Image (tube, rainbow, N blue to C red; front, side, top):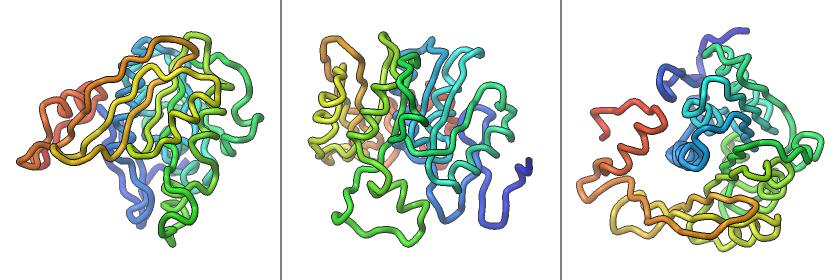
Length: 254
């Protein structure tokens, strides 16, 4: 398999010594992805059976896998062929083919995400712009990552519920002001263990929120997480988050 970046691709550091292939002008991994992976790592640090739904180019799943024991195995489900191909090449590039299974298909399809209820961690970063509420990107890969073209948070929660083990954790992010995530968790029969709002800059309203779910438990929300302080630099808390997932500090951005 050719893992050399093409002229329209970049090869970027993901976590530790793992790298990721991305389109230069397509969908690229983000802070949202890192925070979902961190939430999963905190929720179930010894998990060995991982599932990432709507996996995109593989960023959430791989950042989660990096935090887990060496014998952990990750399954990734992605509907967009271009993202699936990039993820497959990234897995090969990092020598992870024996630790990662990639499935090309729609997470809404029970054949893609069957009712096994045996995954200790399920992760997702669903698109959260409903059709008709934003401008659809002319780039199909970016459009699919941002707009609810192939499912919404209700679909993600239903898929997670089919796969989640009795003592498992489902972690995802969504728009901070949208009431649908909590409705979707309840509709899928899951319990919200905690919500954590994320402020990308101190003093601003929450942009996104992180959600950790299970089959049962008591809800205990976490304090808001602030990414950047008044000076525009990463906060100590966010630097600790990055360190926990193996993200290499960038002295020019911190």
